[in-house]
Length: 172
Image (cartoon, rainbow, N blue to C red; front, side):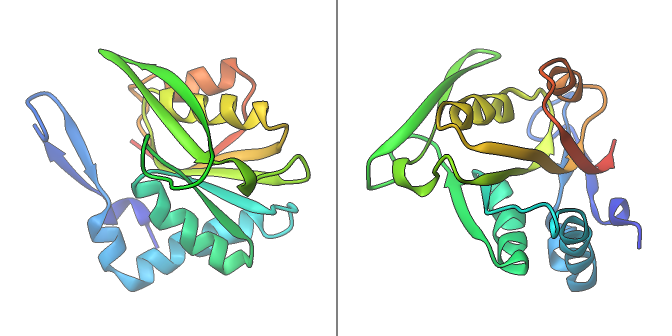
């Protein structure tokens, strides 16, 4: 099955010059979604992963399904103010301004072997912030996983330069 065929390119969305990669057709097709999760499962089932950290919001979809399939915990990495207990946070630069990610402080320990998961690797800023935050918690990061990689943007190059292992299913 060609997972790429279920990811639609929407030109000029959300603004002119942007080609949005729409994953909703992939999610709407049970066979394609199952194949996506099973492909990740085959890669990670024997790597001793103890937790999957999913990046808000579309990363949650794939991370929770994979965590369920693997029988491991899921830890949400959220925008500020969304988590009710004590959090650990990491600020990071955006093209115009900055943003922040948070997770519950006690959800990860130094004993964890973590997979970081998001739907899309573009500039790499969000995942690099996630890696920086998890490094402060002394967890082991097995890899970063993405459904889509945008080749014209610098995310993959930035991860390679930082020696961060990653895996993507589809490149555009």
